[in-house]
Image (cartoon, rainbow, N blue to C red):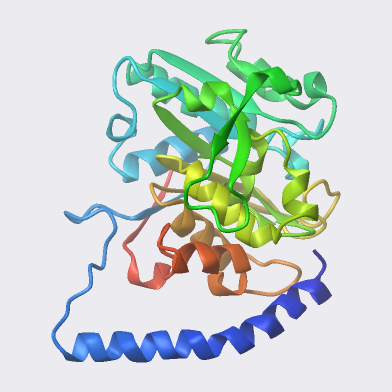
Length: 315
């Protein structure tokens, strides 16, 4: 999506803003009546969102630690699937794939937590052996048969989407259906059709036919349908390099931010990432990204990050 198309989305959003204002009015009335809304998702003072700055691997570890540590998300013996971006045969500096050091660190943490099995999966857009090469090499220290680019339909199984509005069923990677824990590890990048590609958009890499979401359905609404089906327990956004324009494949403007954002709430993680960086040469609020706003409205997570607890640290 270029800046012009993003502005078109913003214009339609200004119309929807009447609904937003009505919601704020009703919220104010509830608060005036003594209703207290929870400020935090996590409760007990735990941060809802963690922001860590530093080298990729160290920042990923620090961000997870700020949320309470990997033991909070992965238990001994569990089967874990990590979903990074590895759709392109590019090096990390181009900002199209998740940095291999972040994925390696996540695998290391899951192993340390006693995970029974860890797999790193994606459905690449380009030649799979080249797309997964960097992450596979980084993870070979644990297991050479851990990282897969799945480009054959036999690895997918059809499942219903009970709460789907646009999409009622889809074919999902079997390993994901059989896993106990799903960890989303997207790289922060712009996207020509969705505006941004973060954890919710990234779930499209775990299904067989994602093109139907572009040509048959409203893309944003179907992204939310999918997010209702594939909801990670942990999101770790690689914003060490942010592809600010010309995503998802680039080349585009890459912002060197040396930042990792983590949350148990995929909507909040995506919203925080949108809010923190420049996209298409300007700043946006999370509600201006249609699928983030719809996900918030459907109750899949929180986009009002200004009301959440955000912990920040240097790695």
